[in-house]
Image (cartoon, rainbow, N blue to C red; front, top):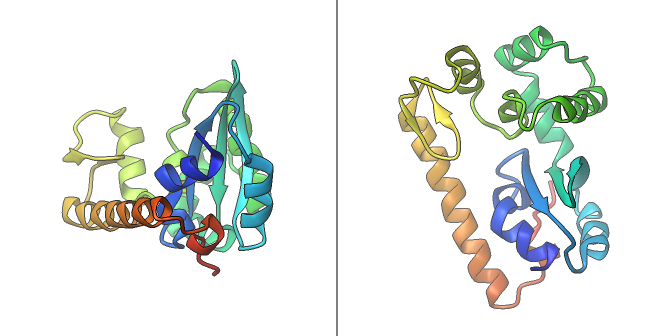
Length: 176
């Protein structure tokens, strides 16, 4: 599978400027460097979070959207409680450190644009007692979560369709 295919499958809402970030798990993939260079010119950023036994966890993000998501009062409170610093670069470095000690630190949901109330609920309930679940466990507003999931899913399906028809990945990456 090419890096472009991985991005379309797993990061379409981030490409579309609808979601602050996505995680991609990849081993060796075709055209990764060229694709990253092309998309960085369109406003995306990439960070290698972990590299375990040849599987790399790549964080794909839009810095301005990510800063906004992490600046909500509840998100900032959760991050502060967990020892995160204030700046986005320092927070990303600390998140990378957290991935060294945990396969998936729970607060990563804040970075992925999940509602802070749900991330807090997940942490407090240790993943139990959710009202419902999709790509994240929902603790606060299931109707809003369903709306967000439907929007992201529709985006993903549309992007897959466009990519299969030959649309270049750069054209699928909305500039902010």
